[in-house]
Image 1: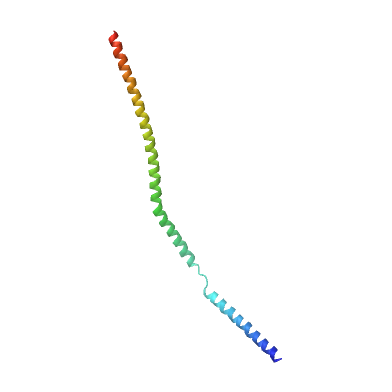
Image 2: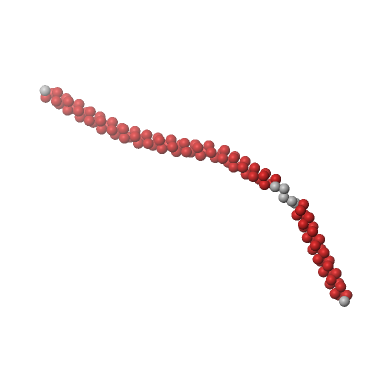
Length: 109
């Protein structure tokens, strides 16, 4: 019987220690209660980080877009310039042909 009593006593001690451990764990959890300020601070930090990133990247994006559209306009103008040069050469030939024709007709009469 002494053995049974010792087993019961040791079981009571182990259950009482687990109960004590559980209550201590519950106390530490209740001490570390959630107050919610960490979320607002983190959210504020994220918003500030995004704002700084945008402030650094938006000018670069704007400049790249401006350069792109200006280069498209310049390319279009260069194409038109080349076409006008060719048209100018053609008109000069026509004028030269008309001058030659006019000189020939003047000598005939």
